[in-house]
Length: 150
Image (cartoon, rainbow, N blue to C red; front, side, top):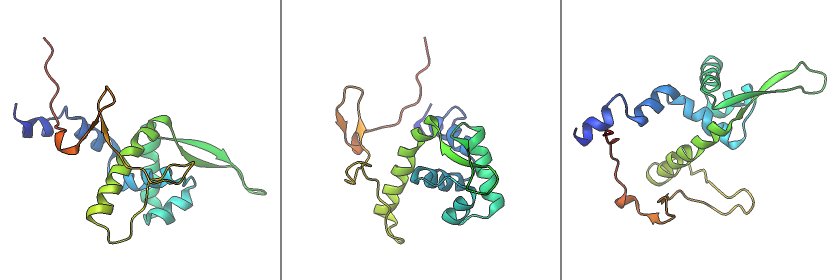
């Protein structure tokens, strides 16, 4: 199997993940959830998407276990739901950060967002690290298909 056919095969984990997440606008909702956005109306404002689209993206991310609902009530108002990243959702945050950092470097038109350490506000970057803890350069990383068993 050629490298090109590995990446387009139906078993490709990149393809399966993108198909599960659905439209690219799901990543905008995920981005904003990672920034701390929790309420429906705030997602509408922060993403620039219309209400119907935000509702559909939240529903999809809930169904995938990426977000969960948490009830809240403002004083004197009915109980509503906030949307909070799950552990599974938090595992996708590095993907959003990688896209953000690529965009900051190659498409910096709107001014970059930054990923920072919560406790120190020190900027952080993503790195490839081997299972033994060795930092691996981007040039030395290759994608390989799953090897058949047996």
